[in-house]
Length: 528
Image (cartoon, rainbow, N blue to C red; front, side):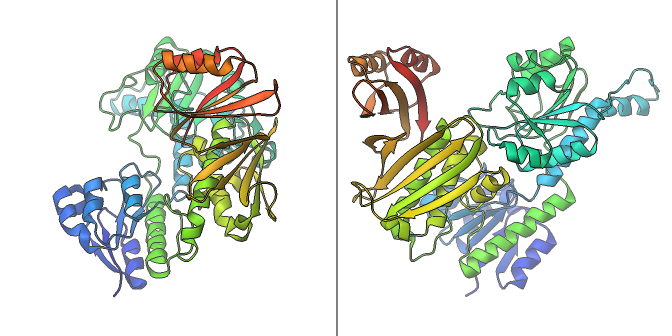
């Protein structure tokens, strides 16, 4: 029997035809995504669900989807899909992460031109019959410095367009290597340097804990007076109240936003500000981009339903059915090793070395490497999956090396991930015990055994008497409960590492108090 797909949002006729041409039965019901009850009633009949942003694939929908095998999102964002519940039901969730990059980059350039020449205000004035030619004095782009906060897929396209406009392009991106910067024709700089040198600043980074309000009042104070700010990436990257204050004071000459912290943005602090240009999240809204992502998701879903091939999956590696049970715990280990290193890496990554020893060396290490890169890149890029991670690493000039070895040392099999940055090389190793659970066995050359929980305090310290007691007392006084505690050191009195599993989030105030404990060198909260 042919697989059956429901398209519950608007997709192009060409995408619908792809399903038909490849022998997949398809029902095109573009309005059913907005009808929750109808969707719940019919979803159990389908093997695949193709959506855009209107359909909300909630826990209830997933529970009712008795036969569903794959959800395909035409676009990048999957906030409308409960990925955790889908994964628990064995449903693959895939998106199309590269289909609208050019369109979004072009929109950023358009917004930069619009705010530099005050085009929206001039248009409204002229159509009102005012002809205020002397009022709208603009700024040229030629010869100006453009600062990119984020220089990945979209940022690099913006850089190429800006260089074509004869702008000087500088970029801040922890993942941008010097070699990649040279290839793109941009100068890699630190954030403070970018803020102080740029005439125009455009944001092209995901919204993470590290990047939320990356442009705040302090950042704006470091900018050139009369600079312009453009955000076509994610709402929340800029503190909207701070941007409004800077526009009112004339510190910023203008700002252009396509995205907002709360959307739909019907009442926003920026509305009505001097020389503020805005659009309703139109970055991907071109005929070509919408067609591209629709065709891509149709092809990906057909490949999976007909051949079992997995591309751009957010919750499943490219692993065959035969090897999945044996490989699964090592995939989890690889992701944890990558995430561990990624959360501790704050400078540009030049290379990654993965060492596989013992039985794991005979497994599908390509999938394990992809899993490790996913964990490594996710803390900064967020929307990485096991298919896109190797591509994203290559785009950023990160050299990936794989080594296979015979059994060495005390463990039958293990994996070691080493991250080479501009400043240092850091390694972390792990294995899978007989219970199938991954364990950390070495960090920065220090031996220790630890199972990683959801919240782990990573503490480097001097090995001195009384340290453990002080640390435990500070956590206890702060109401933080310790679940597990793991220690390791190079030698007595030398550098040491603590991995402390705690029962939840740790506030910034508590982190500051932990940093003040005697002999502590570094404290970070890692999340898994």
